[in-house]
Image (cartoon, rainbow, N blue to C red; front, side):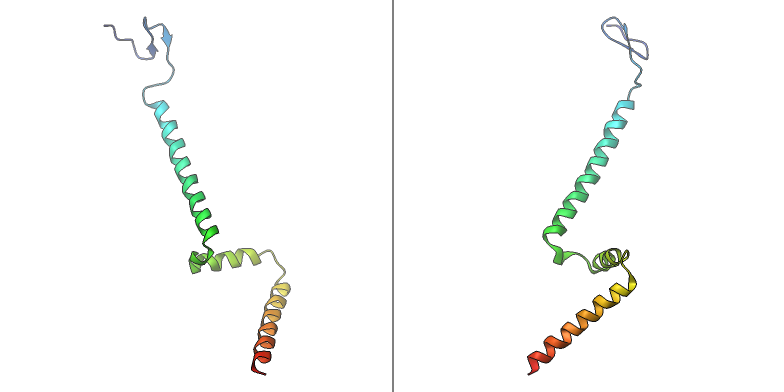
Length: 96
């Protein structure tokens, strides 16, 4: 049996092989790791989408901050006042 020189392959060592041994495996490994990360994120998103009550409190606060970040501060204050006024009205009407 003959052994081809480095960089050649084939029955008669006639095919030049530019890929060093192991180099092709690195790309496959990197793609596999990226695929695992993306799949993990998608599973987490789907889980919390179906079970929003299980989102940690820290994450809920971050979501609130990010969702209100682009809004006008005065509009945010008005929303809070409307919510407080609504709660006052509902509690006063239930005490009657």
